[in-house]
Image 1: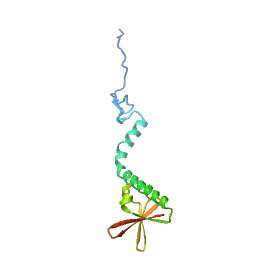
Image 2: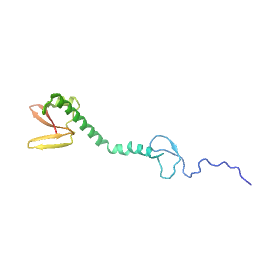
Image 3: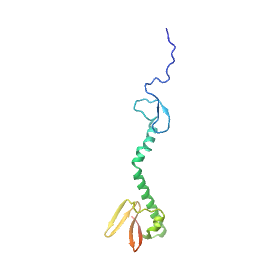
Image 4: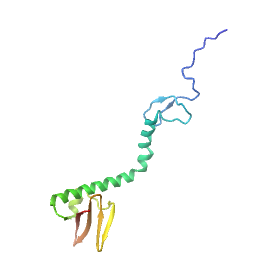
Length: 136
């Protein structure tokens, strides 16, 4: 005799899962190690999870160096000279941070801290600290 059983909608032995990227979509995994709906969701989870944490400090420093370079460019173009001398307080008011630079160029006694396009040297005159700006 034939039994009237309703066919299961989901014949897979794997239970439904919620995508691990954080989107909240419920999906039927094709493999036991599938935790994301598709490769786009996997890439999103990687780029906003481990990779973001891994490169957080590097991104912060790069951003600070770019900002310093833009500030030096602003004053270099303003004065239109080969070398520009400014008070450090003026640059710091714009957000300049002398702790972040990409390299050092030492020529004799002069020690220039290099950014992407510009370089600067700190000089002390009495109680004032001046910054000499030049193009690399």
